[in-house]
Amino acid sequence: MSDLQTYITKRKKTDAEFAKNYDEGFENFKIGVMLRQARESEGITQEEVARKLNTKKSAISRIENHAEDRRLSTLRKYAEALGKEIRLEIA
Image (cartoon, rainbow, N blue to C red; front, top):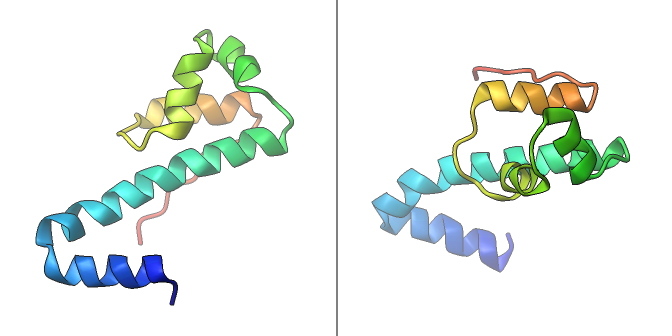
């Protein structure tokens, strides 16, 4: 286990607030990473996605890089701009 993972595991056990927010925050972070990777795999720039969505590059950057809540409708439009679809799973 890495030093970071050891720290996170220990902190989650000793800090209820950290534990509560960590998992949700990490999931939101992963969504942005997945969107960026999908865009890059298609060879599309943030500017190109922005044009397709009729928005600014800065909005695309926020979608990809900030782990805040994103609307499902926004995620669907983003995926459509890449010629892809969003699949949801309840596990």
